[in-house]
Image (cartoon, rainbow over all chains, first blue to last red; front, top):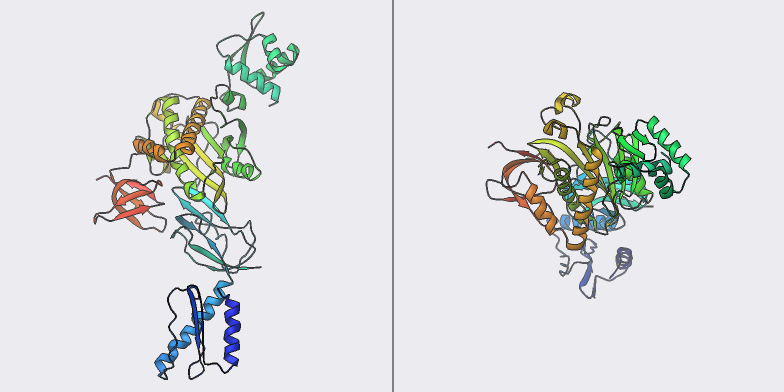
Length: 162
Length: 328
């Protein structure tokens, strides 16, 4: 499996080369990079996808072009997210951002955390579990709302590791 | 209280109906008879009434209504729970104290008790009214080897154990409102707050906080609680020995806990259901986000989650909510 960094490098190399189309297959993952007419490069957004990646159509229609640009943005986002650590819920229950309704939330975007920092409480059947960050870094995004039901393994926070 | 004095007190409690000779006490503890006499005098100064008869020995006549380590230990039938007792006159919250002790590695079965909590708390920082000497304000540390997703079942286990213990110690039959409020004739007198310490998915400690209104008078309750809260004394018309109730609770939790670890949740579930007041009735479930679901409380699933069937026949799985019984 290629790493995001390796795909980035590939894109860069192909971009600078005279190659028009590049395909790579290993086990269940596939990647297709194709240069379109107005020099658009696209990486498959979901690298691990089992579905074959749709090759980019070199259609000159403006509609199609915007689509391609959107796809490009998405892949950039996907790449960025993959560098972030997700704090996941260890159990099904209600997510509480603060220790009580009148308090400030434990953390918000921009908060610095270390391994032992409490980031939220997840409660089920009146059992309250304080969730610790278990990583040192900065909270980039809070993915759920106070009082929301969260599933087992559901990402709760994105953390930029330090 | 010094260890020796505590030991003497425990012997006196265990032999409440008989005289215990000074010689026997000194043999048992390994100190001189003069030392025994000194400790007896100190206990008298602390409010214990002890008869002392020449050639017969000492006998405990009356003890102050105080939760001492010696008092709880005398007659405690557990194998592990309550073998370390931390008894304080006053604490901000027994739960906070137990949390700290658990973090510092306190062994399973450690119990924290306070005569008075100055900032006793319920869930989500809600205040818990805990006046001096009137109730049982305790927190128990257990360390089951389980995954965190199973931990919520301990709130149901605790509720079932407390119902059994109250029945044993007072004769009163009480009921459980999902998941762990304990009521007598519809009024609440026990609150349970369970908190978990975990590392990733592994439970390191569960801290079970139990608050019981035992000898509280109706006048002791703040106005807003008078219609919805009660105490054992209000209901039974007599005063109860708190130490006996604590002993019964520790015993019942220990036996259900053992059963849970040996055989899983199944039996606990049956027991819980037999005490549940809300099952088979129409209820309102007020969720944390303010949504209210109305329907029939059909039962709990194998995890302890409440199953609520609304009027369209749709089943809602309720993980957290405040339950109100519908009058219809």
